[in-house]
Figure 1 (tube, rainbow, N blue to C red):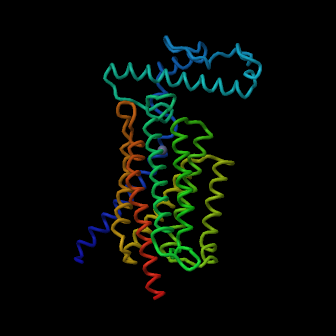
Figure 2 (spheres, rainbow, N blue to C red; figure 1 turned 45 degrees about the horizontal axis):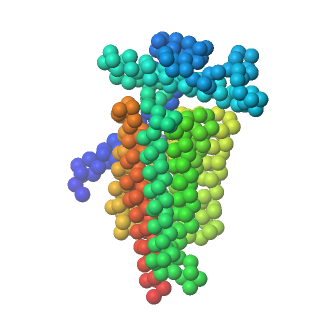
Figure 3 (tube, rainbow, N blue to C red; figure 1 turned 90 degrees about the vertical axis):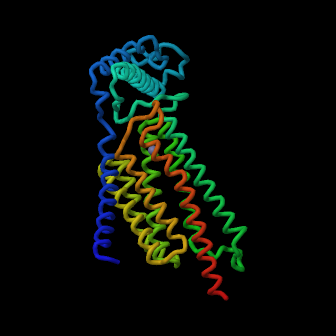
Length: 353
Ligand SMILES: [Zn+2]
């Protein structure tokens, strides 16, 4: 390879990782305070609403509680403190939503672009679902993982030859089954979180995503270093498992530190992308082009988080678009996993012969 070509490639790779890091670090800032909720007319609307329970013509039944904490109407069980807390919270959420919708209408009429409120773009709700597009794409990702997993299972148990004890030749089958379960779990909670953003759903979404990311790093290491012995697998994965568990416990019980979490996720994400990319080249895997394509497009799609654009027609924002791009990538990823199963099976059969 010519020298300037080498320099060019090194520069490209550097740019790529820097932009990837920026993508992640940009996500830190968007989580809390925003321009929209600092707006005085939005604030006064919110204050009025929490006292009167109405925004303009619309009033909310949830806001129907008196100041001494007892429910104004309804049977005794509806006066439970927990229920009341939920009701007050719901009132708060309805007020925020309708004040935001009104404020955005006024702003749009004066020709202003949408702004964020409490860290989120002004989305239109559909049947009480906060971000319908992100929910739909999360559900599609979930379906795609299920489809991939199912076809992987069929390939292993019905199409490829098996050993005498009926076990598949592919040594990494168990790892991918667990991976599929974690991915399904993660997309399920992503769909729940985007339909209703409360503290609990946010934590479940975050923690399932961290668990999936940590586990896929383990899979990347075990697969690329051909770790096949059970004892060696335990030795390699134990420290990582311990780290990921501690990280989740720290976030949940001590401090939900978005900045620190993002650093951990970037490190784990970049590490596994590099491992897969380099391994694909070094091992000369027959499906390495598919693997590289998934890695490069997957990382490029994350740039959508940098160009964090407001929701188109109130529905599809950058984050939702990002969830959309992972749907075809998931299909390709499972296709790579199936190729790997076929490849390893044929290698083993040739050894046996
Ligand atoms: Zn999401």
